Image (cartoon, rainbow, N blue to C red; front, side, top):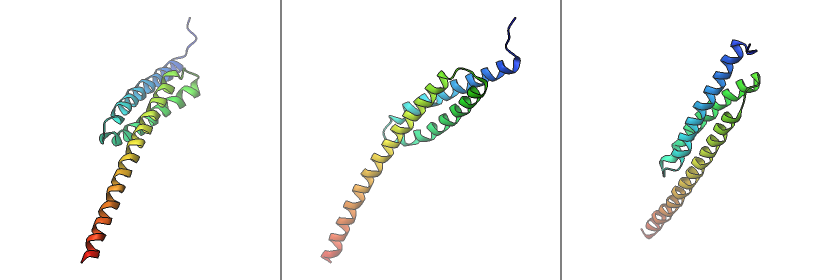
Length: 113
């Protein structure tokens, strides 16, 4: 006879479901983060994946379930977020370089007048 209670089985399937959902959203985050210019929006998917996986991790820790799938989802989401942040930083630096060049050009034109 099984020693698992229905409540334990319910929470085990719940933490497993959060782990799978978090992993799917984390994979979408990782794949989206490699797309130039659009990769910045992967940060939104990453935050969502981290929240979903975090809830699953809390449930798994409280009830003593396996955490491998959830940890994989968290690592994948964090990797996707870091790539998205790197793209955001690169786009920001490109924009600030062009902005300073435009300001210098405008100042040169103003000084000529």
